Structure formats: C-alpha cells, structure tokens
Image (cartoon, rainbow, N blue to C red; front, side, top):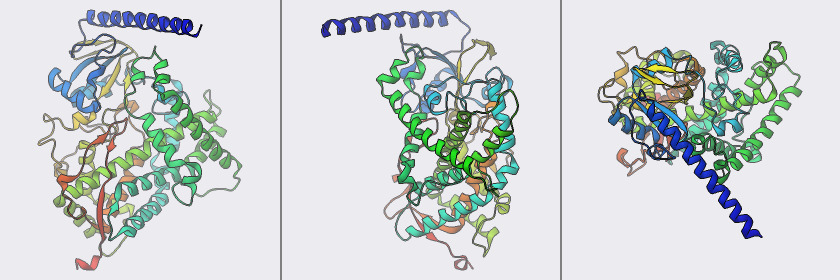
Amino acid sequence: MAMLQWLKDFMLFVFIFMALLIKLIFIEKSNKKISNLPPGPPTIPFIGNLHQLGTMPHISLQSLTNKYGPLIFLQLGQIPTVVVSSARLAKEVLKTHDLALASRPQLFSAKYLFYNCTDIVFAPYDAYWRHVRKICILELLSAKRVNSYSVVREEEVARLIQRVEGSYPETTNLSKILGLYANNVVCRIAFGRDFTEGGESKKYGFQKMLDEYQELLGGFSVGDFFPSLEFIHSLTGMKARLQDTSRKFDQLIDQIVNEHKACNKIKEHKDLVDILLEVQTNDSGELPLTIDNIKAIILVMFAAGTDTTFITLDWAMTELVMNPRVMEKAQKEVRSILGERRVVAESDLDKLQYMRAVIKEIFRLHPAVPVLVPRESMEDITLEGYIIPARTRFFVNAWAIGRSPERWEDPTAFKPERFLESNIDYKGQDFQLIPFGAGRRGCPAITFAIAVVELALAQLLYSFDWELPPCVSAEDLDLSEVFGISMHRRENLLVVAKPYTFYEDS
C-alpha cells in the first residue's frame, strides 16, 4: 500500500515537472521570438542561463559583459533578466527610466524576514512604499536626526579604540572588533541598547541570529528564479530556516517594542523604535503603520546598516595595511589636524579630504552591495533600441562599473589620489560610482552611513600605527569574498596595532 502511494506521488511529481519543463521551454521560445531583446548567451532548457551565475555572480556577469556588451539579456530560470554594466546605461536605468523600474521583485527570503516585504528596501513600488520612504527621509534619517545620534557614534568609537588598545602587543582580530562597532552603533540607534556585551548577546543568542539573518538574506537563492516551484524552498531547507530565524527575531523585537511602550519617561535621545511608535500614534492618514510595519522598517535598517558599515571599514583597513604609502599619507593628514588632541571630533571630518578619497576608492573597488538590489519593470521600456517587456528583473553591476577601464585609469589599482582633483561623488548623481544606488530606490541612509564610517576610520588612523603580523606580507592575505546581497571578505583581518603617541613625532 505504501509502495503504491509512493508510485502515485512519484508519477505526480514527474507529471508536474514535465508540465513545467514544457511551459518553461515555451516561454523561452516566446522570448526568442521577441527578436528585439538585448544580446546574451545561449540558454539551457529549464534553467536558462542560471548555471552561468557561478559562486561570484558579480564577476561572472562582468565576464559575460566582456563578451556580449554592457547590456545583456539572461533567462534565469523563469525570470527574464537584464544586466547593466556601464555608467551610461546605469543612468538610463536609474534615472531616465527610474519610475518604470522603481519596483522590486518579491524575494522569498525578504517576504519572511521583512513581514511580507513591508520594509523600505524590498517593498514593491506603491502608495505604501512612498509613505514609508517619506517617514524614513523626514523622521528617521534627516540630517538633523543623524546629527542627534552623534553621542552614540562618539561613545562607540571610543569603545572601538579601547578594544584595539587592549589587544596590543598581541595580534588584533580587527574584523571582529569592527563588526562589534557596526552592530553596537546600529543597535543603540535602532533599539536604544546593544546586545554584544554584558551577557546580552548570549542571553538572546543575538549574534548567532544576526549571522543567520545575513546569510538567509544574502545571495542568489535558486528558488527565487522559479516562483511557480515554491516547494524548492522546502526541499533545500530554506523555508524552515527562514521561519525559525524570523520567529526568533519577531519575539525579540516584540519584547523591545513592548518595553518602549511601557516606558513613560521622556528621553533626551530617541531611538528609531521611539520615533516610529510616535509616528504610528500621530498618523491619521490612509496608511497608518502597523506593529509589523514598524518591525519590518527597523529590521531592514539594522540588516542593511550593520553589514555595509562593517564591510566598508574592513576593506578600508585591509587596503591601507596592504598599501603603506597610502596609510602613511592618510595618517599624516588626520594627525596634522588633531595635533595633541587625541579624539577626532565630527567637525574635523570636513578637513580630511584624503581620507574621504580613500573611502571613495573603497566604494569604487569594493562596493558593499556589488550587484545593486534588483529592480523590476512595471511596464515595457525601450533601452538602447531594445524593447524590454514588463516584469523583467534588472541587475546593475556596480562592482563592474567601478572597475571599467573605459571610466577609470588603472581600474584595479588602489589609488585614492584619483578623487582628489575630481568632483565625482557617491550620492547617486555620478553613475560611475553608485555604491548606494540612485533614483527613487537609492539608499536613503547615505548621510547616516558616512557619519558612522568616517568617524571610526579617522580615529583608527590617528590612534594606531598599523602593520601586518610578523612573517605576514600583503601577498599572503586571503582577499576572497563571500557573496551575498552584501559582500564581505571570507577571512578576518589580523593586524598589530601599536598605540600612537603625539610626542613621538614632535
């Protein structure tokens, strides 16, 4: 009897599989009949070009671009996809056709992790997203609000320096310490507390939850390219992991929100939960925020803010220790401005032009989100004479654009000087440098992110003389990366940090 049931289930699976295969082949042939699509590589039945993404899609896509041009068409499973890899075409996608391409594909992981995509990053383009974006820009991430977080930044930078000092003269795991800094800043600003010390991390399993969160959110999930085969997520175990992680975070955020609601005292410095609860209370419009909406907004800001800050600082220090000439020049600049003062003030940052050039060069070579969060077309558009149908997914390869020999001299070299006599910036107007994206779906947290990165990097440059551990050279460092929506180095950066004394230079 059991064998008969198994045979029935197996035959049903084969029937469904064959039906879908025929459907996909038909779709593929239909796409080919649309002769006015951009060029691209040949496809394989059922999977299309999915096999060509590889383990490092940003690099694989660059290789395809070298062969087929900066505008290519791929059939990724069931998803028609356009990949853009030049500044000129990025401007077309992110500015000229910004509105038509302002929506997001509904990624399976984002649905679970961000309460059915009701956050600002993964929400589809509609009235709700416009409402949330307005709240984020005016209430959470305005210049005035970012300035109000300065106390948190200053205190966490001081703790960062203390942790590094505590390891000398032994080797310092700088990557780990930078990760703590990024987590603490965003935790305190979002929740009004951190979870990394005093037993809090162990109590809530916070770091383990965060690592799982980033892993589940990151990368290209095969199931996302076969939306009609949702059972794939169950077969791979992805669905169970998403349910478990989202449940744990939901319980934690519930507790934090309830603590905020129960607190009656007036706070001098409001965190993001305080602000969003106020918005919810005062919002009498047609789209009032629910508690789940608040959770989604908080969690996406946390997920985006911690990883990108850490990645930028980690790559900055890696490139600097590998390039002693640049390190010395950056240190000389900050030390000449501070003199005998030991603490960098945020008012000093405008004077650190070379350090800012270093950060731009990191954004160019190592954008934290190498292939920008995908967009989805809401209508047919014409791009370079090609007709791109609605519901096409768009990838912008910011990593490839930052290394284009057409735009950059010696594109793979680490040369911050290239920005000293240049007006190129990263705020979405210069499309050869778009680490934060551009247009309607550009990151609204640029001011916040830059403030967190600049203050920490300036203080690290001032406070220590850096070198690699004994018997380790720059050529020995493993620079390979773990690909995800954000992309960090596989190996931690280990260094020796000797505390700097001003009188040594006097």
